[in-house]
Length: 115
Image (cartoon, rainbow, N blue to C red; front, side, top):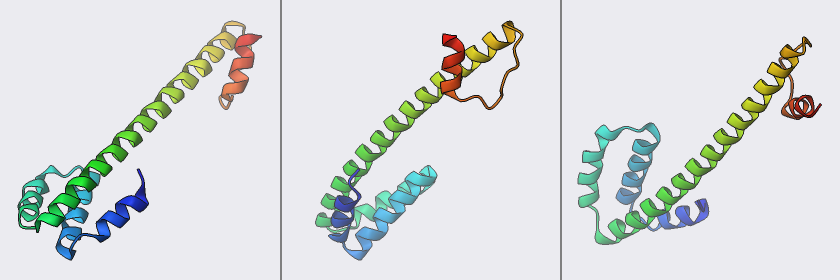
């Protein structure tokens, strides 16, 4: 998400529009759905220019959130893969009667599995 673009677009809003944007961001970040009806009501009271800008900003924020979710999912997948490698190496060492280093790195685990 391009924070500069979002900031520039947010600057175009009236003070009331910026307040609504801040409330929307707060509701999303805290996952507080109870505030949505009040935000929608305030949104209806804004001038058309603010409504148009907020619509664009919501799209930008949504795309940014989706990108962040994708990145986090990739991080989770990487961590799960590393965990599987570490567990396999520990199991191999245990089966061979060798000591298991609980602080073994993933690289060390790969070496154990290759060995």
